[in-house]
Length: 102
Picture (spheres, helix red, strand yellow):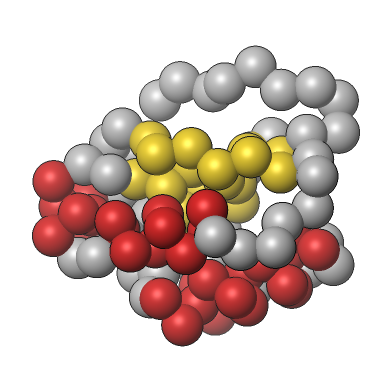
């Protein structure tokens, strides 16, 4: 999984657009992110397969490596507001195999 080159303070939201995620609505998820009011340091990228097809649509935020799974259209405003603007992860959407909770 490739990482785009980012400046020190830039974030990138990778929205998977591979077959499985597309079949689960990731095209709409991508459009919602692209049309959101985002901080200046955030870019949105239509990504290739992120290797998490069973839990798509997948949204990955780099460079901190936050992985969201089963993202629905109603989740996008929360991710934008809570994570991208305020810096707080949306706990209920975190990928459980990547963000382990004990």
